[in-house]
Every structure is written in C-alpha cells, then in structure tokens.
Amino acid sequence: MTAQLIDGNALAANIRGEVATRVAALQARGVQPALAVILVGDNAASQVYVKHKVADCEGVGMRSILDRLPADLSEAALLARIRALNADPTVHGILVQLPLPSHIDASKVIATIAPAKDVDGFHVASAGALTIGQPGFKPCTPYGCMRMLQAAGVDPRGKHAVVVGRSNIVGKPMALMLLQANATVTVCHSATPDLGAFTRQADILVAAVGRRNTITAGMVKPGAVVIDVGMNRNEAGKLCGDVDFEGVRQVAGWITPVPGGVGPMTRAMLLVNTLEAAEATAG
Ligand code: NDP
Image (cartoon, rainbow, N blue to C red; front, side, top):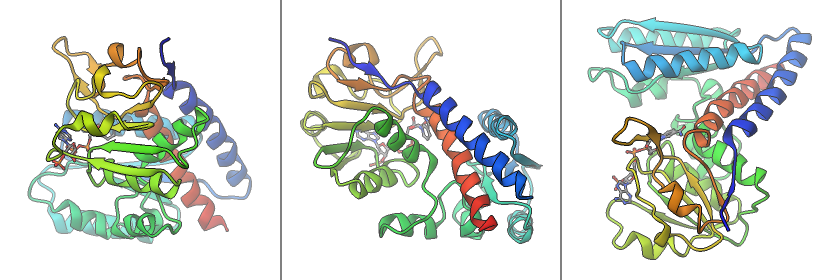
C-alpha cells in the first residue's frame, strides 16, 4: 500500500480562501491588512520569493508594500526603515527577506522589527513566546506543517515525533510546536550518530535538513507520517525534498510531496500571520 498524499497546494488554497473572507470582513470595518516586504540587494532566489509573497497578498485582497533596497544600503539605513514601518499604523506585518548582505547583521535587523508586526515569527520575543507556550507569531514553515498534520487527521498527542534539523526557523520551532501538541519529541542534527535508529521510531517524521535522500525507505516506520520540508535540486535541476519520495511512499502512511507540499503552506501561513496581526490591531 502506498502512502496517502498530504496535498499542500490544495490545503494552501483552502487557507487562502479563508484568509480572503476574513480580509474582506476587516475591510468592511475600515481596516486594510498590509504586509511590508523588504528586499536588500538582488539575490535571484530572494527576488522570486518576494514576488510570490506580493502576489499572494494581492490574491487575498491584502495590501503589500515592496521595498527594494540597494545591496550597499547601510545597516543603519535599514534599521531606520524598519523603525518607520514599525511606527506606521497602516502596516501590520514586516518581513525582511533573508539572507541579507554580509555587512548587515541579520539578528540586529530582526530584533528591530516590532514583535506585534513580526509575521515571520523570527524575533526573540516570538521564539520566547513559543518556547513557554504563550501566544505569539509562529514561524510559517513549521506552522504550515502543523496544519498539514491537522488536515491529515493526525493528532500528535502521545505520538513520537522525530524532527531532523534544528535551525531557528524550521527544526527548533517545529519541535516546540509538536511538544506543545503533546507529542514526545526527539530532535536530530548533524552530530546525531545512526540517524536511522531514531527516525525508525517516529510516528511523525519531519525532515528539515537541506540534503537530498537524507531519509530513505529503510529509515521510516511503516505507517508513519512523513513531512518533507527540504528544498533541494537533483542532478536534472528538478526541485526535490530531503526524503526519497518514491521509496518512502511505499512504507509511510502519509507523506508530503516536493514540490506541492510544505512550500505552498509556508506561503499561506505568512498570510494567516499577517491577517492575525491586522485583526489584533482592529480589536
Ligand atoms: P539549515 O541549514 O539552517 O539547517 C539544517 C539542519 O539540518 C541543521 O540543524 C543541521 O544540523 C541538520 N543536518 C545537516 N546535515 C544533517 C545530517 N546528515 N543528519 C542530520 N541532520 C543534519 O536549514 P533550514 O532549517 O533553514 O532548512 C532546511 C531545509 O528546508 C532546506 O532544504 C531549506 O531549503 C528548506 N526550507 C524549506 C522551506 C519551505 O517552505 N518548504 C522553508 C524553509 C526551509 P546542525 O545544526 O548540527 O548543523
């Protein structure tokens, strides 16, 4: 039996539909939800990402402000721009596209975003709130993964979740969200010996590594839910995840594809966070 697919495209389309309805409700109350996206420099991948974010906003009736700033912009000028957006009541979410040029300290930049507008969920205030189980913005990728579990009818309570990867934007917040949902959580990383010994215990397996074929069929417990966050390219230049999809789908109970899995959900959850930021200001 092959695994059932968790269709990120379909789920993200549903979420965008719900967001559009709530945006219209806010507009009727005189609030136009708005996201400011700051792009410094001309990184090719970043240009594509910000274009998608702007188009996603348009699709649900949100306003977006795209600030394209030169690669040689000073850190001080960028911080000043963020402070101006913090103070602008018509802007509800602020996102600085990463990576930033090397002369700019990304942690300083993120720390300057007002926590109430931190729709990426990267600010230490957001990370701290997640850690102690208080309300706050959740990073979009793991937030989207939780929605995918929910859509598949998978309740993490009492399950063993294994997260491979411990970055601040994916692995760590993913582990915290699963813990909050009452899973027993194991976090693996590059210094984990015998990765398969851990992943084979997983009822829920999340791969967030950035390396093709990190998870193969022999590393997966039969019937497990496998969420593939990875975004890599194969020899032919085709987008693929961290999971050997064809092999693992023969073993898993549920699996997310790449493309069409976590990627579209990440984009949808940014809209959810921005909407919620606007709703919070509307009371
Ligand atoms: P990082 O490079 O920041 O983190 C990768 C993590 O994987 C690290 O914790 C690293 O461990 C761990 N790792 C590396 N090699 C191994 C290994 N052999 N065994 C076990 N763990 C290993 O990446 P991100 O978290 O930012 O992203 C991960 C992947 O997800 C990338 O492919 C990225 O493109 C993708 N991504 C996809 C998104 C989407 O929307 N679909 C959004 C964000 C990211 P250590 O900490 O020890 O170095």
